[in-house]
Every structure is written in C-alpha cells, then in structure tokens.
Image 1 (cartoon, rainbow, N blue to C red):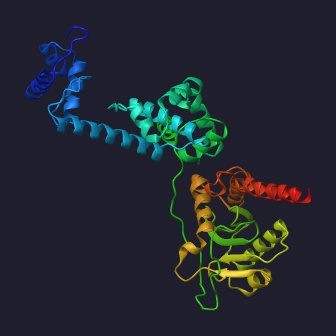
Image 2 (tube, one colour):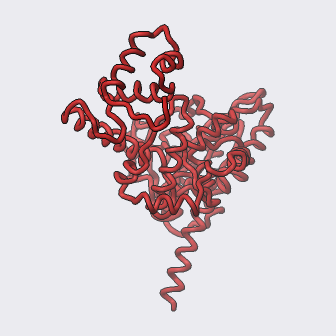
Image 3 (cartoon, one colour):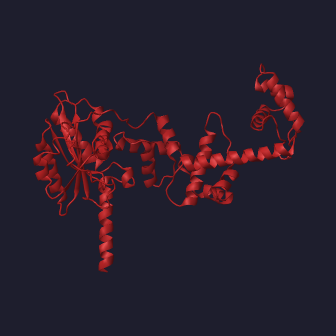
Length: 402
C-alpha cells in the first residue's frame, strides 16, 4: 500500500468480505494478498463490525447512505457516553472537581490501552460529555502526571507498605484513600490492578458463632436505639460478647463500643460466660470515659445483659435491647467482632487464654482504635475521629469567647 493511499468505500467493504470469505488465511496473508497493511485491514474489520458491515472512508464522510452516517454518529456518541459513565462510576478522586475529572480520564485511557483487547477512547468526545475542555486537559497533563504515569514501581512500593502496616487487612479502596492522604492521584481500580499483579489482597470474612444464651424476650425490654449515628461521643454505647477458640478451650470477649466513633472504649476477656464479666467491662468503660451525663447503652437480650448485676452497673443509663429476631439491631458491635476475627484472630493457632489476650490487645489497642481507617469516620481511625470532634469544639468555644 503506497503511503497516503485512500481507498474508497467499495474497496474497503470488498476487502472485508474477502477476509471473511477466507478464514483459512491469516490476517497478515489476507492483507498481503490485498496489497494493504494488516493494521489497515484489522481496522476495517473492526469498523465494519461496529457499523454493521458499512465501512466509512476516513475523513471523507463517504457512507453508503445518510441513514448509515447517522447511525455511525449515534454509535460514536453512545460509545463516548458509556466511557464517560464508566469514568464517573469507577474512578473517584478527592479535591477540586475539574482536576478530579482530568485525573480519572487519564487513568481510564491508560487502563483501556493496557487491556488485552484494546479499547480506543475518544478523548475529546469523553471530555465533552464530562463537561470539561480538551485544552484544559492537555494543559493539566503537562503539569500534573497521574500516579500511573509515574514509575509503577514507586506506587507499588507505597501500596505494599500501606498493606503491611494494616496487618494485610486493607483492600484497594482503603489503600487508595491512604494514598490520597499522601497526595497521590490514583484510582481505586488502578490500585486493585496493582494489588492483583503483586498477589496481595485483603482478608475475607469467616463465619462466627452466636454467644447469646437464655435470651429474655419479655415485652418489658424495649429498643430505643433510633439511629446508629449519634452526633457526639458518649451518647450511645453498644455491647456484645463473642467467643475465641484456643487449644485449651473457648475464651469470651466482652466489648463496649462508642457508636459515635466506633471506638472500643472497654473490653474484658474471660474463660467463662458470666454476668460479672459484663459488669467489669461496664465499670471499665465508665472509668475510661468519665461519664457525667445519661447515655443509652444498647445490647442484645442475653442473660448477662438482663441480670440484676448489669442493671445496677448501668444505673443512671438508659438501657436499650435488640428486638426479638432483629440481629441487625446490634450490628455495629457484632461487625467489629467479625472484623477482629477476620483481620487478626483467625490467622493464628491460639494456645491459651494468655495468647488470646495478647492478640486481642494488639488488635484493639495498637491497630483498630488508633490506626485502622473506618469509612464511618471519613477514613480516619476512631481516635482521630474523636480528636477531630473535640478540636472543633475547642475552636467553637474560642470563637464564642473572642
């Protein structure tokens, strides 16, 4: 094929039919027989498929009919719209909106180019549907390369460090959030692809057993917990008991969570399921938080939580109990116990009570409360979330005083 040669529509369609009529020939051989490049023939085949057998002449607007021309235009618009929607759906970034769109578009184009079957993205068409300019996008590209345009090894090193610092618990969404905090501009899908290449992934939930025994289903116990997002700390506490298996037998963990920050404010580990251990946990929480006002404490209806000892320990508090058969009423604390096992406990063969205590301490006191980011807390740790609340209160008090 001579350089700059233009082929009319009839030749292109005939070339496509020739290729389809001779499947025994390789693409390269068919193109050689036609006197054209294999890339040109491949492009015509793809275009014919997209336009139902009609191959438009490049740059000439030479379609078989006005109807075919309109169909081609609508197909291009549909393709661009689908690409734009995919960018908005799968690529999220912090910061100013226009820059976020530019970053997401660059990531998506690179991702499509790396696929085994490449998908060509119309940059101008996509940006038009996203409501930003091509000239602005080009200017942004020159001054601000995305993470995937840098050396992938640098980004992978950061991903691996965050993954290891999380005790191998963070998946792509949380690792991406941590990268954003460090100023990296990268998509969740890109982080997921890198993690897949590196052979790392977050832990998965394993089943856990219910420890509620001798439930009290009397109508005297009411559920007054109306919502799971109180506006301040020490407004609502939730508590539950879970078991941990050891070689010497089961041990039982009682935990109390502040529902505002999802922080575990008290926990007690024991070798028996007694009400006294629940009382110990409540007293520990009261000492830790220095409670000065009434609060709601929500639990299930297990015998430990309806005992006289528990009611005495929570005197001055408002007791709330899950409704009969409504397991999700206490979902937050049960979810925490599931996380504890999924992200930490289930990795170990636990020898005895002392070994279990050490592991629970490490997870709660050195990771969950202090380091582990939580979507409810805006991807801050529970401690950081509470610190942010109290800092805002101090600022407000200073403003009022001034």
